[in-house]
Amino acid sequence: MNEEQYINELKKCVHCGTCKAYCSTYESDSEESLGARGRLALLFGLNNGQLIPSNTICEKVFSCTLCGACTHQCPLGIDIKEIIYKGRTILRKHDSSRKLLRFISKFFTNHPLISFKFLNLSQHILLPYINKKDVLPFNLTIPERRLKDKLQVVTVPRKIGRVAIFTGCITNFLYPNIGKSLINVLNILGYEVILPSGEVCCGTPLRTLGMEKEAILLAEKNYDLFSKLNVEAVLSLCPTCTLALKSEYPKIIGKGINYSYDISEFLLDKISSRENIKNISNNRAIFHDPCHLKYGLGVINEPREILSKIGIDLIKTKESKCCGFAGTFCFSNKSLSKNMLDTCVNYYDRYKFETLITSCPGCILQLSQKFGNKKVVHLIEVIENIFL
Ligand code: SF4
Ligand code: SF4
Image 1 (cartoon, rainbow, N blue to C red):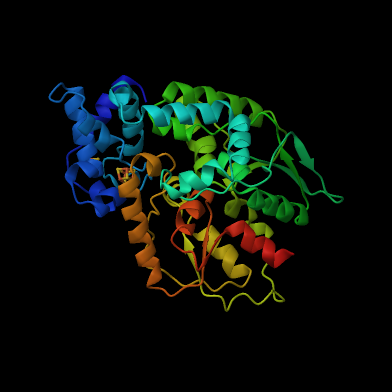
Image 2: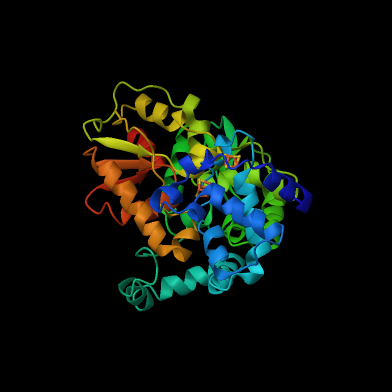
């Protein structure tokens, strides 16, 4: 979004408040400036000089989860999420609270392997201390091996197609098991799977911190790598990565991978209804909608249809709640993130479920903290369990 578009979009707002009704941070703390309308009003005031940048304004603008729930609700079609991204880029130089987070995020993004090795080696020394001191918003466990070391082509004897996996940082470094599940399921269905080397972070974490230029460099690298592969689809287990490749790259670099899909979109017509399925339907399960899957990609029914096909009778929940993870948000807005997690957990607890199924490794990381006695699993693990 260029300067002129940004100003025009801000001017369009008639302060009706429709967006506020869908805003999870406003739901958590009913303060006008913690809602969509309030954040836009602050950015408008900054733009016309009525306000000057301050820590307070930065906190309000950087407290949005960028979930996108508000965007499609605005009767004037204002792209609230893009305005907030732009506002953060403008405010970045005034935002001292997130300086360290920016430095660490940039370091991790530019040196993922060194960072992984360091965390892996310090697993039994530094991490227990960090976990005990509550430095991180969640307890971190680093697996022995990441999913991808180098280019991998996992082929099958009777190949019916070829797909690539955009691994994503959380899957690659924290949950390689779900990546393996995806490869297994795709192989069983007859797909050759490519995990190219050279993939970098999708760029969303840096963009959320107002680091648009740095995010653009990452987007260009990923676009160059994935657009050259001869595949019918680029799949990711993380809806934030899929949303970036498909819908956000066109906004920041003018081109995207329009054949990138959430796994449920790709697998829906490839998984047939099964009669002799393993009996796991007695297990009371609910599906948690990740925000970027629901509001960003518009994928709501596909995971539920797949689960129904494979014999999982989901408990129907009335609404979905943001878990409060939201990438860098949970580090820089710890108390708000915790409130949102509590609201989400209390809401689901009414349904007396045993397994929570979702489609995002970030949601798994966040929700696992509170559902210690219940299973929190990725959709692909459930599918794999049925297949194998
Ligand atoms: S993107 Fe989400 S958190 Fe941010 S203003 Fe919109 S609804 Fe609220
Ligand atoms: S819904 Fe649209 S017009 Fe109404 S307050 Fe929100 S951004 Fe402004």
